Image (cartoon, helix red, strand yellow):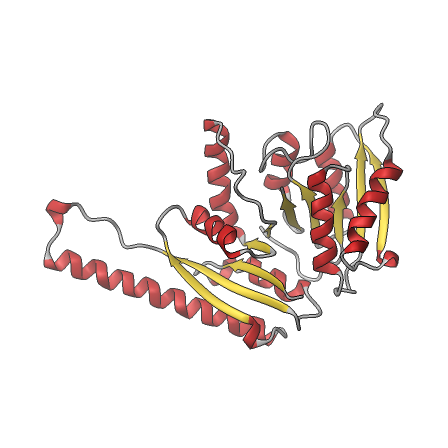
Amino acid sequence: MDRHLLVTISNDPQHLHGIRYVAYFFQDKRDIRLTLFNVVAEAPAVWAEEKSFETLAQGEEMAKRNLDRSLQTLAECKRILVQHGFLPDNIDTKHSSQGMSRAMTILREGEEGLYDAVVLGRRATMRLAEILDESVSKGLLMEEVTFPLWICREPEWGRRNVLLCADGSEPSLRMADHVGFMLAKETEHNVTMLHVARPGNSEDTAAIFAATREALERNGMASGRIDIRVLEAAKVAPAILREASDRRYAAVAVGRTGAGEGLLGRLFMGSVSMALFREIREAALWTCR
């Protein structure tokens, strides 16, 4: 079965972090399908009393320039990915007018397109952060985002392996399903199941790891490519970040809500989730509900 990713791109060649991440992360590219997605900036709005032949013509010209630039960027990104081994026939390009905020346009496409994951580069992540700030301040939720997100703020080229945070919750196990599916054929990457235990908490880590391992293996992950690690820490997020940095994982994978207080509340609510979202840099953050 093909693995199908929506990869968001900006028009700035210095910020193609999502493109670069998938280029180095996947080794077996034969059954990877990519849809490259660019949101075309709209021409500035013009008040009715300001409209004239000249302003309308200027708006149309700006819209055409924006579309041409978007198509050129999409073509260049496809060229880069083909150069790194992806099959041309497995790469589609798509653009959309910005009918709402850029981040919401991307999230809507991710929901409607039934992709296995949506890859967000640095620019898209910045837009998402703005929405999160607004959601927190207004008490709003983004529970409609049901697909996995890969957040690639500043991924470091050449990293390997995935750190899978395990707490036994349903979102954590769904993430294990996703990791197993995405990595089954990626033999260059192993998975470390990490459980961060708070001091004084008595948890059945054996049962947590058994359920997580079963989800990985059910999706084709070989048992010999799965490790376990238990850390004890009063603060969960710093422990995860240190582990990801010290062992140079390519990705940290988490469910959005966990058991008890949860690792990631709702989309990115709470101190632990916000710390991961705000602070993780060299590794990508994979998350799903």
